[in-house]
Image 1 (tube, one colour):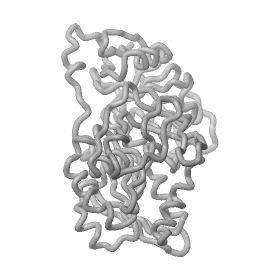
Image 2: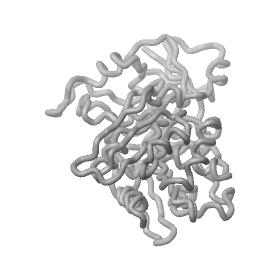
Image 3: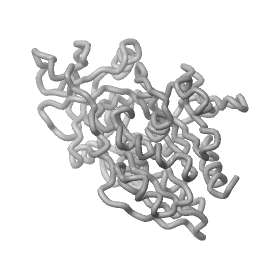
Length: 352
Protein backbone atom coordinates (compact mmCIF):
# COMPACT_ATOMS: atom_id res chain seq x y z
CA UNK A 1 0.00 0.00 0.00
CA UNK A 2 1.12 3.55 -0.78
CA UNK A 3 -0.31 7.06 -0.73
CA UNK A 4 -0.14 10.09 -2.98
CA UNK A 5 -0.55 13.19 -0.82
CA UNK A 6 -1.22 16.44 -2.67
CA UNK A 7 -0.23 19.86 -1.44
CA UNK A 8 -3.91 20.80 -1.13
CA UNK A 9 -4.47 18.00 1.38
CA UNK A 10 -6.05 15.42 -0.94
CA UNK A 11 -4.94 11.83 -0.34
CA UNK A 12 -5.08 8.97 -2.86
CA UNK A 13 -4.48 5.37 -1.80
CA UNK A 14 -2.86 2.95 -4.23
CA UNK A 15 -0.17 0.32 -4.70
CA UNK A 16 3.59 0.69 -4.95
CA UNK A 17 5.38 0.41 -8.29
CA UNK A 18 9.05 0.87 -9.06
CA UNK A 19 11.68 1.75 -6.52
CA UNK A 20 10.62 1.81 -2.87
CA UNK A 21 11.48 5.03 -1.05
CA UNK A 22 9.60 5.80 2.21
CA UNK A 23 8.91 9.37 1.10
CA UNK A 24 9.40 11.15 -2.23
CA UNK A 25 8.42 14.78 -2.89
CA UNK A 26 8.13 16.55 -6.24
CA UNK A 27 6.15 19.06 -8.25
CA UNK A 28 3.03 17.24 -9.47
CA UNK A 29 2.28 17.62 -13.21
CA UNK A 30 0.22 15.70 -15.76
CA UNK A 31 0.92 14.68 -19.34
CA UNK A 32 -1.80 13.82 -21.87
CA UNK A 33 0.14 11.56 -24.24
CA UNK A 34 -1.67 8.37 -25.24
CA UNK A 35 1.65 6.79 -26.25
CA UNK A 36 5.28 7.61 -25.57
CA UNK A 37 5.53 6.82 -21.87
CA UNK A 38 9.15 5.75 -22.38
CA UNK A 39 10.00 9.10 -23.93
CA UNK A 40 8.24 10.83 -21.03
CA UNK A 41 10.17 8.84 -18.44
CA UNK A 42 13.49 9.65 -20.12
CA UNK A 43 12.84 13.33 -20.85
CA UNK A 44 15.27 15.35 -18.67
CA UNK A 45 12.79 18.26 -18.65
CA UNK A 46 10.81 16.42 -15.93
CA UNK A 47 13.61 16.83 -13.39
CA UNK A 48 12.20 17.35 -9.89
CA UNK A 49 8.64 16.49 -10.91
CA UNK A 50 6.17 13.70 -10.16
CA UNK A 51 4.46 12.85 -13.44
CA UNK A 52 0.82 11.76 -13.75
CA UNK A 53 -0.14 9.90 -16.94
CA UNK A 54 -3.71 10.75 -17.96
CA UNK A 55 -3.91 7.72 -20.27
CA UNK A 56 -5.17 4.90 -18.02
CA UNK A 57 -3.03 1.91 -19.12
CA UNK A 58 0.75 2.29 -19.03
CA UNK A 59 3.49 -0.26 -19.71
CA UNK A 60 1.66 -2.38 -22.31
CA UNK A 61 4.57 -2.34 -24.78
CA UNK A 62 7.26 -2.76 -22.15
CA UNK A 63 10.69 -1.13 -22.14
CA UNK A 64 12.45 -0.31 -25.42
CA UNK A 65 15.86 1.38 -24.88
CA UNK A 66 16.03 2.56 -28.51
CA UNK A 67 13.11 4.91 -27.73
CA UNK A 68 14.77 6.62 -24.75
CA UNK A 69 15.30 10.38 -25.05
CA UNK A 70 17.92 10.78 -22.34
CA UNK A 71 18.65 9.98 -18.71
CA UNK A 72 15.59 9.87 -16.48
CA UNK A 73 15.40 12.74 -13.99
CA UNK A 74 11.83 12.74 -12.72
CA UNK A 75 11.07 12.29 -9.01
CA UNK A 76 8.04 9.99 -9.20
CA UNK A 77 5.49 8.35 -11.47
CA UNK A 78 1.70 8.03 -11.12
CA UNK A 79 -0.51 5.79 -13.27
CA UNK A 80 -4.02 4.36 -13.15
CA UNK A 81 -3.10 0.83 -14.23
CA UNK A 82 0.36 -0.67 -14.75
CA UNK A 83 0.65 -3.52 -17.24
CA UNK A 84 2.99 -6.28 -16.01
CA UNK A 85 2.67 -8.47 -19.12
CA UNK A 86 3.90 -6.29 -22.01
CA UNK A 87 3.45 -7.44 -25.59
CA UNK A 88 5.90 -6.02 -28.12
CA UNK A 89 8.64 -7.69 -30.15
CA UNK A 90 11.05 -4.88 -29.18
CA UNK A 91 10.37 -5.07 -25.45
CA UNK A 92 13.29 -5.84 -23.12
CA UNK A 93 11.38 -6.14 -19.85
CA UNK A 94 8.58 -4.68 -17.78
CA UNK A 95 8.21 -1.04 -16.87
CA UNK A 96 8.04 -1.88 -13.16
CA UNK A 97 11.45 -3.55 -13.36
CA UNK A 98 12.89 -0.55 -15.20
CA UNK A 99 11.52 1.92 -12.65
CA UNK A 100 13.09 -0.13 -9.87
CA UNK A 101 16.51 -0.27 -11.58
CA UNK A 102 16.46 3.47 -12.16
CA UNK A 103 15.40 4.38 -8.61
CA UNK A 104 12.09 5.93 -9.65
CA UNK A 105 9.31 5.50 -7.07
CA UNK A 106 5.73 5.29 -8.25
CA UNK A 107 2.14 4.51 -7.40
CA UNK A 108 -0.66 2.86 -9.37
CA UNK A 109 -4.32 2.14 -8.77
CA UNK A 110 -5.22 5.78 -8.12
CA UNK A 111 -7.84 7.97 -9.81
CA UNK A 112 -5.66 9.85 -12.29
CA UNK A 113 -8.71 11.64 -13.75
CA UNK A 114 -9.49 13.21 -10.37
CA UNK A 115 -5.83 14.07 -9.76
CA UNK A 116 -5.65 15.79 -13.15
CA UNK A 117 -8.91 17.65 -12.50
CA UNK A 118 -7.52 19.05 -9.25
CA UNK A 119 -4.31 20.19 -10.95
CA UNK A 120 -6.28 21.87 -13.75
CA UNK A 121 -8.61 23.65 -11.35
CA UNK A 122 -6.13 24.60 -8.62
CA UNK A 123 -2.86 24.73 -10.55
CA UNK A 124 0.39 22.80 -10.29
CA UNK A 125 1.17 21.81 -6.72
CA UNK A 126 3.68 19.69 -4.84
CA UNK A 127 2.95 16.12 -3.80
CA UNK A 128 4.45 13.21 -1.89
CA UNK A 129 4.50 9.47 -2.59
CA UNK A 130 4.75 7.79 0.79
CA UNK A 131 4.03 4.71 2.93
CA UNK A 132 2.17 6.68 5.59
CA UNK A 133 0.20 9.91 5.33
CA UNK A 134 2.20 12.62 7.12
CA UNK A 135 0.54 14.61 9.88
CA UNK A 136 2.59 17.65 8.90
CA UNK A 137 2.71 18.76 5.25
CA UNK A 138 5.40 21.41 5.76
CA UNK A 139 7.98 19.47 3.74
CA UNK A 140 5.55 19.14 0.82
CA UNK A 141 4.72 22.84 0.84
CA UNK A 142 8.39 23.85 1.07
CA UNK A 143 9.62 21.80 -1.90
CA UNK A 144 10.96 23.75 -4.87
CA UNK A 145 12.36 22.60 -8.21
CA UNK A 146 15.70 24.41 -8.08
CA UNK A 147 19.11 24.31 -9.80
CA UNK A 148 18.19 21.27 -11.91
CA UNK A 149 20.31 22.10 -14.97
CA UNK A 150 23.37 20.72 -13.20
CA UNK A 151 21.48 17.45 -12.73
CA UNK A 152 20.64 16.93 -16.41
CA UNK A 153 23.39 18.53 -18.52
CA UNK A 154 26.26 16.50 -19.94
CA UNK A 155 29.59 16.45 -18.11
CA UNK A 156 31.83 16.71 -21.18
CA UNK A 157 31.48 17.80 -24.83
CA UNK A 158 30.67 15.08 -27.36
CA UNK A 159 30.63 15.08 -31.17
CA UNK A 160 27.99 13.27 -33.27
CA UNK A 161 28.78 12.90 -37.00
CA UNK A 162 26.41 13.90 -39.75
CA UNK A 163 24.42 11.24 -41.58
CA UNK A 164 26.10 11.11 -44.98
CA UNK A 165 27.88 14.20 -46.28
CA UNK A 166 28.58 16.89 -43.69
CA UNK A 167 26.95 20.19 -44.63
CA UNK A 168 27.13 22.19 -41.41
CA UNK A 169 28.63 22.11 -37.93
CA UNK A 170 26.13 22.83 -35.14
CA UNK A 171 26.85 23.31 -31.45
CA UNK A 172 23.99 22.09 -29.26
CA UNK A 173 23.99 23.53 -25.73
CA UNK A 174 22.70 20.78 -23.47
CA UNK A 175 20.23 22.11 -20.91
CA UNK A 176 18.67 18.62 -20.77
CA UNK A 177 18.54 17.90 -24.48
CA UNK A 178 16.32 15.20 -25.93
CA UNK A 179 18.20 12.74 -28.10
CA UNK A 180 15.98 13.28 -31.12
CA UNK A 181 17.16 16.89 -31.45
CA UNK A 182 20.59 15.49 -32.28
CA UNK A 183 19.08 12.97 -34.70
CA UNK A 184 17.00 15.66 -36.43
CA UNK A 185 20.16 17.65 -37.13
CA UNK A 186 22.27 14.64 -38.13
CA UNK A 187 19.76 13.49 -40.73
CA UNK A 188 19.99 16.94 -42.33
CA UNK A 189 23.75 16.72 -42.75
CA UNK A 190 24.86 18.41 -39.53
CA UNK A 191 27.80 17.39 -37.40
CA UNK A 192 26.57 18.08 -33.85
CA UNK A 193 28.86 19.06 -30.99
CA UNK A 194 26.98 18.81 -27.68
CA UNK A 195 28.41 21.00 -24.91
CA UNK A 196 27.50 21.39 -21.22
CA UNK A 197 24.95 24.01 -20.22
CA UNK A 198 27.47 26.33 -18.61
CA UNK A 199 29.90 26.52 -21.54
CA UNK A 200 30.91 30.12 -22.29
CA UNK A 201 29.94 31.88 -25.50
CA UNK A 202 33.62 32.54 -26.19
CA UNK A 203 34.39 28.81 -26.08
CA UNK A 204 31.47 28.01 -28.38
CA UNK A 205 32.36 30.70 -30.91
CA UNK A 206 36.01 29.60 -30.86
CA UNK A 207 34.83 26.32 -32.42
CA UNK A 208 33.48 28.26 -35.44
CA UNK A 209 30.04 26.61 -35.57
CA UNK A 210 27.72 27.34 -38.47
CA UNK A 211 24.84 27.52 -35.99
CA UNK A 212 23.92 27.05 -32.34
CA UNK A 213 20.99 25.05 -30.93
CA UNK A 214 19.55 25.92 -27.51
CA UNK A 215 17.98 22.75 -26.13
CA UNK A 216 14.98 21.98 -23.97
CA UNK A 217 15.41 21.51 -20.23
CA UNK A 218 13.77 21.65 -16.79
CA UNK A 219 12.99 24.27 -14.17
CA UNK A 220 12.44 28.01 -13.98
CA UNK A 221 14.29 29.68 -16.88
CA UNK A 222 14.83 32.92 -14.96
CA UNK A 223 17.08 31.29 -12.35
CA UNK A 224 19.71 30.36 -14.97
CA UNK A 225 21.35 33.77 -14.95
CA UNK A 226 24.79 32.73 -16.22
CA UNK A 227 23.31 30.69 -19.09
CA UNK A 228 21.11 33.62 -20.11
CA UNK A 229 24.13 35.93 -20.18
CA UNK A 230 26.04 33.56 -22.49
CA UNK A 231 23.03 33.21 -24.82
CA UNK A 232 22.94 37.00 -25.08
CA UNK A 233 26.52 36.93 -26.34
CA UNK A 234 25.68 34.31 -28.99
CA UNK A 235 22.54 35.86 -30.48
CA UNK A 236 23.54 38.02 -33.44
CA UNK A 237 26.89 36.28 -33.88
CA UNK A 238 25.70 33.01 -35.45
CA UNK A 239 22.33 31.54 -36.47
CA UNK A 240 20.51 30.39 -33.32
CA UNK A 241 17.53 28.03 -32.98
CA UNK A 242 16.00 27.49 -29.53
CA UNK A 243 13.52 24.91 -28.28
CA UNK A 244 11.48 24.96 -25.05
CA UNK A 245 13.81 26.13 -22.22
CA UNK A 246 16.15 27.45 -24.93
CA UNK A 247 13.23 29.51 -26.28
CA UNK A 248 12.51 30.94 -22.83
CA UNK A 249 16.13 31.79 -21.99
CA UNK A 250 16.66 33.42 -25.40
CA UNK A 251 13.72 35.72 -24.66
CA UNK A 252 15.19 36.58 -21.27
CA UNK A 253 18.56 37.26 -22.91
CA UNK A 254 16.83 39.69 -25.27
CA UNK A 255 15.21 41.63 -22.43
CA UNK A 256 11.89 39.81 -22.13
CA UNK A 257 10.30 38.04 -19.18
CA UNK A 258 8.65 34.70 -18.46
CA UNK A 259 5.73 33.60 -16.30
CA UNK A 260 4.72 30.31 -14.71
CA UNK A 261 1.59 28.78 -16.23
CA UNK A 262 -1.24 27.47 -14.06
CA UNK A 263 -0.62 23.85 -15.05
CA UNK A 264 1.57 23.98 -18.16
CA UNK A 265 1.37 22.11 -21.46
CA UNK A 266 2.52 18.48 -21.50
CA UNK A 267 1.66 15.86 -24.11
CA UNK A 268 1.60 15.17 -27.83
CA UNK A 269 -1.68 16.86 -28.73
CA UNK A 270 -1.08 20.57 -28.13
CA UNK A 271 -2.46 22.88 -30.90
CA UNK A 272 -0.27 25.79 -32.00
CA UNK A 273 -1.18 28.46 -34.58
CA UNK A 274 1.39 30.16 -36.80
CA UNK A 275 0.43 33.83 -36.83
CA UNK A 276 1.73 34.63 -40.32
CA UNK A 277 -0.19 31.87 -42.09
CA UNK A 278 -3.06 31.16 -39.69
CA UNK A 279 -2.29 27.46 -39.95
CA UNK A 280 -2.63 25.34 -36.79
CA UNK A 281 -0.26 22.46 -36.07
CA UNK A 282 -0.44 19.67 -33.53
CA UNK A 283 2.68 19.65 -31.39
CA UNK A 284 4.40 17.82 -28.56
CA UNK A 285 5.13 19.97 -25.50
CA UNK A 286 6.53 19.75 -21.99
CA UNK A 287 6.81 23.02 -20.13
CA UNK A 288 5.42 24.94 -17.16
CA UNK A 289 6.65 28.44 -18.07
CA UNK A 290 5.88 30.75 -20.98
CA UNK A 291 7.43 33.82 -22.59
CA UNK A 292 5.48 37.07 -22.31
CA UNK A 293 5.77 38.15 -25.95
CA UNK A 294 4.80 41.78 -25.28
CA UNK A 295 7.69 42.17 -22.83
CA UNK A 296 10.17 42.08 -25.72
CA UNK A 297 8.84 45.22 -27.40
CA UNK A 298 10.34 45.68 -30.86
CA UNK A 299 13.22 43.29 -30.14
CA UNK A 300 11.15 40.22 -30.98
CA UNK A 301 8.17 39.19 -33.10
CA UNK A 302 5.75 36.54 -31.86
CA UNK A 303 5.43 33.82 -34.49
CA UNK A 304 3.31 31.07 -32.88
CA UNK A 305 0.58 31.09 -30.22
CA UNK A 306 -1.11 28.32 -28.30
CA UNK A 307 -4.56 27.77 -29.83
CA UNK A 308 -6.06 26.90 -26.43
CA UNK A 309 -4.88 29.66 -24.12
CA UNK A 310 -3.15 32.17 -26.42
CA UNK A 311 0.24 31.87 -24.69
CA UNK A 312 3.43 32.51 -26.65
CA UNK A 313 4.73 29.49 -28.59
CA UNK A 314 7.41 31.07 -30.78
CA UNK A 315 9.54 34.16 -31.31
CA UNK A 316 11.68 35.61 -34.10
CA UNK A 317 14.37 38.23 -33.57
CA UNK A 318 14.76 40.49 -36.65
CA UNK A 319 18.31 41.13 -37.76
CA UNK A 320 19.71 38.59 -35.30
CA UNK A 321 19.36 35.33 -37.30
CA UNK A 322 17.55 33.82 -34.34
CA UNK A 323 14.19 32.11 -33.91
CA UNK A 324 12.81 29.96 -31.11
CA UNK A 325 9.76 27.81 -30.34
CA UNK A 326 8.16 26.59 -27.13
CA UNK A 327 7.04 23.24 -28.56
CA UNK A 328 9.11 20.28 -29.78
CA UNK A 329 9.53 20.06 -33.58
CA UNK A 330 11.69 16.97 -33.06
CA UNK A 331 8.75 15.28 -31.25
CA UNK A 332 9.43 11.65 -30.34
CA UNK A 333 6.93 10.27 -29.66
CA UNK A 334 4.54 12.82 -31.08
CA UNK A 335 3.40 14.59 -34.23
CA UNK A 336 6.03 15.54 -36.81
CA UNK A 337 3.98 18.46 -38.19
CA UNK A 338 6.58 21.13 -37.34
CA UNK A 339 9.79 19.29 -38.23
CA UNK A 340 10.14 21.79 -41.10
CA UNK A 341 11.55 24.22 -38.55
CA UNK A 342 14.82 22.29 -38.63
CA UNK A 343 14.89 22.94 -42.39
CA UNK A 344 14.43 26.64 -41.70
CA UNK A 345 17.45 26.51 -39.40
CA UNK A 346 19.44 24.71 -42.10
CA UNK A 347 18.41 27.40 -44.57
CA UNK A 348 19.47 30.13 -42.15
CA UNK A 349 22.91 28.56 -41.78
CA UNK A 350 23.09 28.43 -45.58
CA UNK A 351 22.52 32.16 -45.84
CA UNK A 352 18.77 32.30 -46.48
